[in-house]
Length: 230
Image 1 (cartoon, rainbow, N blue to C red):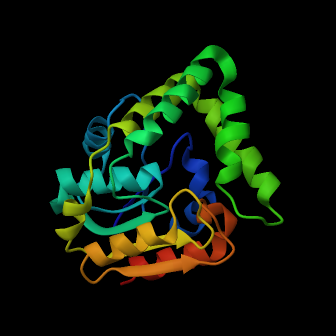
Image 2 (image 1 turned 60 degrees about the horizontal axis):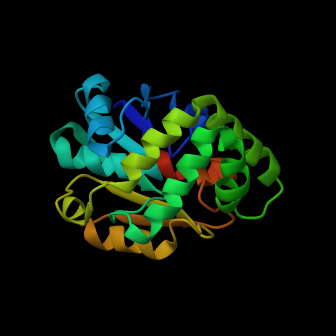
Image 3 (image 1 turned 120 degrees about the horizontal axis):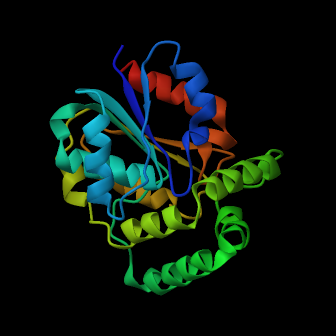
């Protein structure tokens, strides 16, 4: 079985994929890619490639999906299949820049927890019985990474490239997956990626927002297994 590179989203670590790791590790070698130490998508992607297997499947969520697209731009010959979850192929709108800069300033001033708790993480999830538990986990991941990583990742997102032309060139089996209630990366963004990638599959998961790996872990995992068995 081919190895899988999993790439988490903004201020998340491997725990974003905990339910999937438990299932996929039975049959696949897993490479959990860190997205720290660089302040550009190009730099983070190059570092992931430096330590990744020679050939691999790749699955990224949110910022991780943007990095997966950057990896497809840098080294498409190394990717055997592609999964993009809760993500966006477009460059960041300049209207978002001032908002992002203000968040970074607050985080560097010692208010990272408030930024994550009040401004970001509550917008990630749909309503559900595990909402509070998941919010606690994502806050713990963010605080563990810290304000410097938040600054680096925010800069990488701010100046990311538009990847629509990259997606038009994708020839490997591709899965586009999103939560039905994703307010950050709405369904229409995923429909766009589905249209751009020839022969891709689009799966919309009910009862999930921006983090379907945690909100609806069973259906997300089964969908990923089917994608890997293509």
